Structure formats: C-alpha cells, structure tokens
Length: 202
Image 1: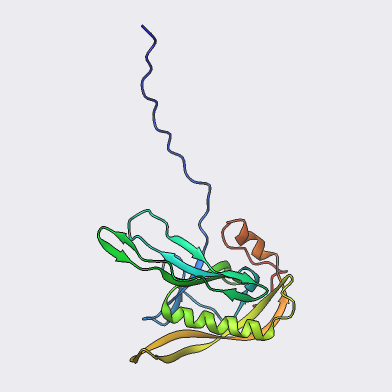
Image 2: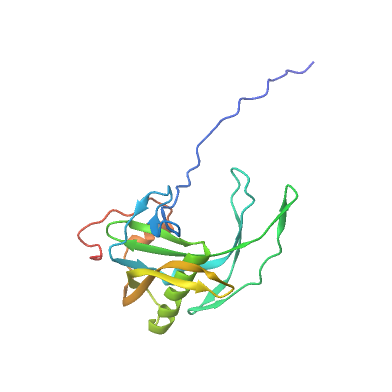
C-alpha cells in the first residue's frame, strides 16, 4: 500500500497589483470624487497625458468580485477609430448593455498622478470637449502633455430628452508642455506621486 498524503492547506496570498487612484465626476453633486467617493478639488489646473488616452466600452456583470469586460477603440496620431457597440450579454436572465467610457492619465501637484475616469453620459461630454481641444492644439504629441484648467460646470440639454440636461465639468486648454516624470509612476501601477520641488507648478 502506497503512502497517502492529506490534501495540502490553501495558501492565501495578497495580490501584488496595486490599485490605481482615480478621479470621477458625480453628476448629482456636481463634484469630483476619488476612488472611494470622497470629494476632491481640482484647483484649477490639471495635466492630461493624452498620448495614453483609452476609450471604448465596458461591460459590468454586477456580480461581486468580477472585473468588467473591456473593448477598446483604436487611437493613432490623435485620431480615434471607434469600435462597434458589442452585443448585450445575459446575467441571471437579464440582458446588460455595454457602457461607453474614456480614461485619461492626469496629474497635478496636489492630487498626484491619477486616472481620470469619464464613465457617465455627462462625464463623457467633458471628455469629448477635452479631446476636441487636444486635436486643435496638439503639435507632435511626442513626449508632451496638455495643461487644462477647470473652468465651470456646464449644463446642456440632452437632444433626445430636452427636459433633462448633461451636467459636466468644462476644462479649457492652457498649453502643451513636456511630459513630467510623475506619469511613469502611474504606468508602474504605484500609488500617486509625491509632489516635490521639480513638480509642475499646478
């Protein structure tokens, strides 16, 4: 008879992947919040790394612990080739649609390096406005980023539902500058960069 061995214990380890700090726009409160829904301020400048913009569709199952599925647009030389809307998928008998999104790495010396998530219909209008200004002012996009300033909260009727409004933050282009080193920390998945004397003054 051979030697029997008991089933080994399960070894639980923590993931080495670090969470990425984000900025979101809350429509009802007309305010910016972080990844924990705590209010934050953008006062007034923020640097967008447009070279690393991502957009497309996300699909959320609504099930606890499941990450969203993602289908990305193609970006090349500042031009976006949008993908078709993926078909809905069923979860527990309910058909769930894909949601449009935009994500842009951003930085200022107070908030550090974060990912700006434009994931609601109103926030998406803000992202469209940022991209239009980027396309108007970009020179070569080689190692540069774009400084914007938060101007005001914009209200705009929804064409398909005139009694309702888009409510979104309006950012205004200021200048194109060299890409600061702080963005490399976001790419490495670390927590937000600490400000220092060499950080951009905004």
